[in-house]
Length: 164
Image (cartoon, rainbow, N blue to C red; front, side, top):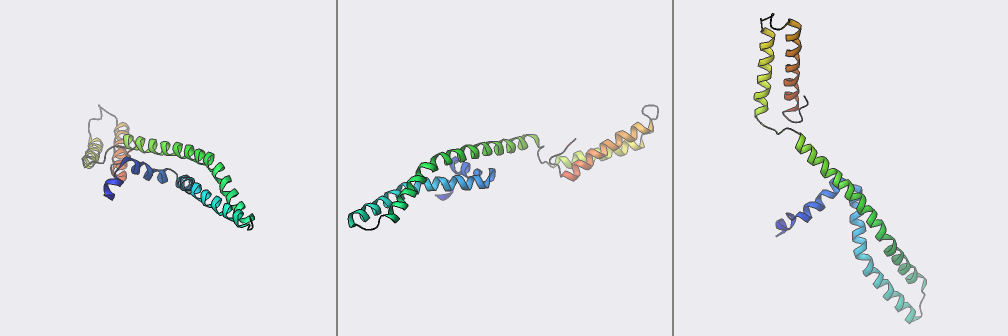
């Protein structure tokens, strides 16, 4: 049952929040929990305050607690909205970056080894090319070095994030 619950889209969304910005996510969750707990705490504080009035006891402590909770209830909502907006922006940017990275990066494939070996063989063939009338030596050397640079880059990157 827990596995089916964690596979829901809502859980996946909430799991992304700390990846986008851990401190804002912690602040958002804290504000959310406080907004859920404070109304019950305010009701309890008011009950304690009414009980102190009925008993004729000191009111400073219960009144201070009830007042502090009331102020927190009033202030917490706009703070939570601001944190939500910032966290939403950061999450959207993080998800956009991940999407862009996934779309731009070439797929990891065993074909990259074939591409690398082919590029290295082509570079070797350029070096041994004897048709000087077709291409001068310095041009063959330049083209061969470019092909080797591409092959080296592919080999170094392991086939991912190849920059040509």
